[in-house]
Image 1 (cartoon, rainbow, N blue to C red):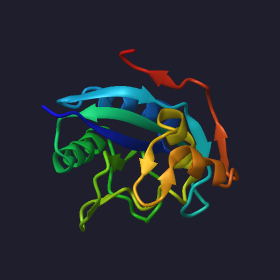
Image 2: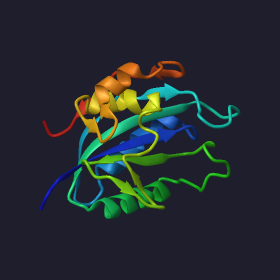
Image 3: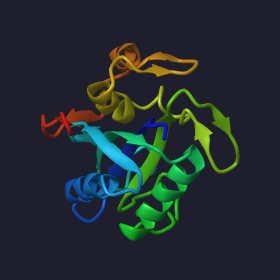
Image 4: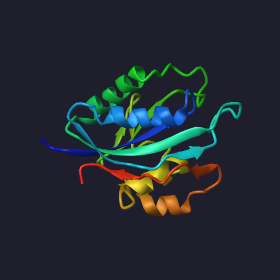
Length: 170
């Protein structure tokens, strides 16, 4: 079976966000036919949406999976529900957990359910900074290398909460 690299952005700003993000990392390691290879440090960030909400905690997980992209994406949605995500009342509003499939190999998808690469990667420092810890040399199709994109990202509104980038299975 072929192993595909997948990168998942994780965010939370409710119910002890750092605990929620760490729990999601543990849960991602349990997805069928999938291995957690690397996880970033935790980062704090200001919310993109309404300002009247708590700051976020963000991280990125680097995984290898034998699942096809659609099945992996469905597994992420199911995992969000299992971790207590409720449909947001407001776009970019507060949430207990958010799992975004950022990249799945070099695959490009543009469907109502899934867009790859994730359309917000290049504009979001809270994605680029942790992603640059996990895969600095990774090419974001159509945009460039992660390290170069992160170097150009505005550092306003983001801060490192810990310095615990972890490589699994090494």
